[in-house]
Image (tube, rainbow, N blue to C red; front, side, top):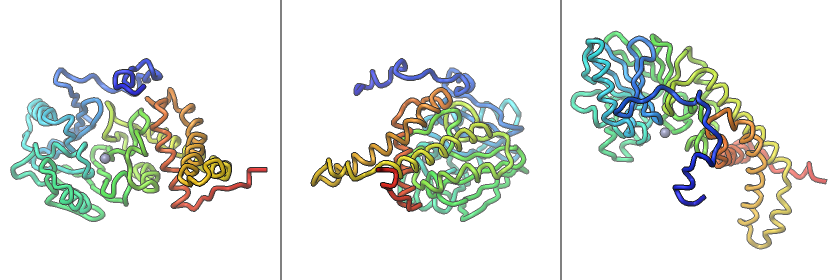
Length: 324
Ligand SMILES: [Zn+2]
């Protein structure tokens, strides 16, 4: 299982539910579809982007480099079909990560770039010519109005990253919120590589506080639904409950005794045992429900992060009370 060839063998894993897939990609390797009215989404099957056509110009939201030039093609295709301008006048960053914004520089010239003030700070730090810093920034809320259309941008605290924002389209019954919920699929490592565990865990409830029918979550091949958010929330709640149970019922002392003078070996053995005990029932429950849930390392690393947050943020202590 160490070579890429054997690791990528799909026969090693449970079948992917058909409901986890979206529409077929075209010959160029992308799909562009209407979300509602003049709001469109684009996917390459793994990443998602969106754009709004207006009478005054096109507003693009995120530019994953994996979609790259196909984003420009998708805008041109839709603009031509609807007889509206294909001139991109505005670009919005959901957050600073290169895998969602690394093709931002494709839209240059007099494009107005909009992002959270922390996105600007992080992009100045990262100094990546592919991700030009936003010209327009905001702290809590910003209403972007272009050609009679509106997007409400809001920051509700750190989650996946310190700067990840909620993008609501009140006239399109849609929320765009990236890298927290994966439509139909399990999270990848460490809560989708997230930085703030508590902020991440609370974010879906904030997403649900907005009115929407369509949810652009940034990943995989289809849009997300309220059901996807509910399954995600239950998955996280199950991990939290399981981690709490394992943390408070496994006695650490025998692990330290066995490790002798190597204290860190004792830490590893104890935390590995807690993580494995907490993750196993969650992996079993969600295999067949969330695509790729049987790739145990994804749930195990997420469980480890949540278990550490229970210890460090919530002050849940290991306990010997369950022991004789
Ligand atoms: Zn990200």
